[in-house]
Every structure is written in structure tokens, then in C-alpha cells.
Length: 295
Length: 191
Image (cartoon, rainbow over the protein chains, first blue to last red):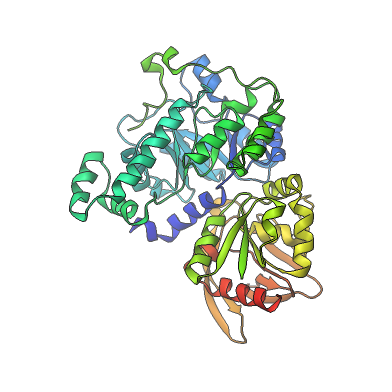
């Protein structure tokens, strides 16, 4: 069974170590240093942050391995990188250069519209986005060791991440109320393996950690997501699209650790320069939403 | 008896589950005032750079230095790093409560993480323990007053001095409570 597999346990183990922390998108070694100095628990190395990918359009692919290596050289914390959904050859390259976590990400242009990557075939752990419980458990069945909300990347708008986190928490609570005779039918209705539904019923939680991502821009956003049940925070465009990235990065780290201490979150929010401008989700044409990529 | 678990970041919840399983009272520690009710402290796995930065900001850094001279602290992985005297390959000011020199990420990156049996000697007999090593550090030198308690191949992976117990691996990622039991005995002995 998947959850007892030693290799899987090692992958989830690293995800456990990242809990309660902030993982920051960085596009060069200098930004990676700023993130590490601010107290980030890991960095996500990429060529363009989601806000720029959204603005520039075109096909978004895995970053140049040379850039990722420069970032690996610059910091001592784990380095993650993104590959396209279904693009296992990009994932093989990322594993070969020794990234610590691969994000099979909807922020990049999908390479396969039918299948996600068989993540069991890799020694490196994967994180995947999800919007609901079915998507979450399907990704775990494929071997994801960590989940994150999809949110709507590059918008600086937290509303979609909130929607996705609430949907998953609500479903977890619902599953714990199901009788054993209901599990197979429920698993069928959400399109996920019954063993994983059973795990959720018995443990009242997902089998792997679930972090927040997609639209986090302020210390208050971080505290909100942690209180809604996120176990860590990914910040994409929110830091390096803001006016004073170093101060904002530190403030979001403080707010994540002390998310229930509102005096500290208030103090962290004080006097930060301009946040990223952000956008209303309704301004985005439906076919340009990133969260609907993946299935 | 009440055990504090440093909850800046990392796998502190897994240590809490372990203590729950054993049946000991515990509380999470994020600020200096949280420490006053604790008889012992666990510093979990996580990122040592993040720990040190936030400890300094909250004032816990100085408090822990004093706490560790009077009471008992266990550190696993990142916890070991910040309790050690010196880090060979990274400039980080640590708590220096145990005379060890350590190398961070000594086995390599996540693809080099592994699970393997180690030999531990907690009460005069050598036994095996299934240990989980994740981007683990290595102890490269032990100094004054440090007693080795566990080995993986030729590396010391578990060690102690009168107040501090450290592991380069993660006993909290297993179901095996022996190392936590040993820590609790040490806490009781130091009360």
C-alpha cells in the first residue's frame, strides 16, 4: 500500500519539515538569498513569476537548468522547481540536477491534457495543486507527497485559494461522517481511490500535508490561510512584485509562524510598502484561468 | 511533567503526537513566555536558518541558552544543528549547548535522503532502530562531555551531554517511542 511505502514516507517526510513555513518564488540567485535571509524554508526557482507569465502569454515551460543550479549554489535551504503537467521528461531533468521538490504546476502550460505524471517513478518528491478533495486524492494516488491549493496564481488575490482550501476542509469533515457502506459510492462520485477516502475517514485529515498557494500577497493573507487549515504558505508573485520584497518576505514569515497571535500579525503588517497591485478574478477571461488546468 | 515543543516551524506536530502516544503533557512554544511552564523542550526538524532568525526576533534565543543549561532539550535534525557548537559549512550563530561540530545537508539533497537501521545503546545493550534521514546533517567532531549513543555505519547519529540529547535523524517520523522515552527519563532526572 502506497502510504506504507518507504520511498513515499521519505518524500512526505520532507514535506513535514517544511510545515509552518513560507516557500518563496525566486527568479535569480540574488532573490533566493533575500528569501533565505528573510527566513523562507524553501525557494521555488523559476524564470518568470506567475504574474509575468500571465502578462506575457505564450508557452510557459520548465526553467533553464543553469538558472536552477545557480539558485541551488546560492542557498542552503531546499530548492523546488516547476515542470509542466504531464511533462515527465522535464521532471527527469529536474531530478537529474537534484532539485529537492518538483511542482507539477498549472502555472506552466500543460504538456498532456489526459495524464498527469506518474510520480511514483521518481525518487524526488512532487507537489501538486488541487481545488477539491477528488483532485487532491487523485494526485496522491499518482504519488504526490504534498498538495497545495491552486488559487489563481499571479493575481495577488486570495479569493480562489480560500475557495479551494474551504472546499477541501469541508469535504474532509464530510468524509468523517460517512458510514463504511457509503465509501465506495462516495469515492466513485469524486473520482478517487477508495483506500484514500478510507484514510481520510479514519484520520480526519489528508494523507499528505496541504499548503496554501495562489494569490498570497500580505501577512494577513498568510494568517488567513493558516487559520483555514493550510500547513504552510507558498508565495509566488506576492513578494518580488511588491515594492520592498525583503521587508514583505520577513513580514509574511512572521505572520505564518505566529498566525494565531494577532498582535504579531498586526505588527508585521505595519508600514510595509506597496503590495503587488493584484487583479479581480472576474477581469480574467475564463480561458485564461490557470486553476482549470489539470483534472 | 510538561514538555515544550518549539513550534517556530517544522514537524513539531509529529513530536506532539509522539508525546500524546506516550501520555505526557506538552505545549507548543513560540514565544519566551511559553517556556516558563516547561520542564523540558524538544526542538524539531525543519529549517535551521529559519529557526535561528525567528528565535532571535522573538527573544527566545537568549531564553533557550539559559534553559538548556538548567533543564533538558532534545533536538532532532535541524534541532541538533542549532544546539551544536559549530557548523562546518554554514555561518550560523547557534545555541552552542552541546560541544559538536556538524555539517549541514552532509549526505546531499533530498534524492540522497534515506531510511536505514542504526545501532543505539541507551541502557547498556546495543539495539537496532529504524532511522529516517532527511537532508540530514552529520556530526563531524564530538567535543568535551559528549557521549555517543547511536551509530549509522561509522557515523555518530545520536549523542548526549548532561542536559542535551541530539539525533541527526527523525525518531518522530516513526512509531518507535524509545528515543522519546529516553529523553523523558533524562528530563525527569534533571528536574
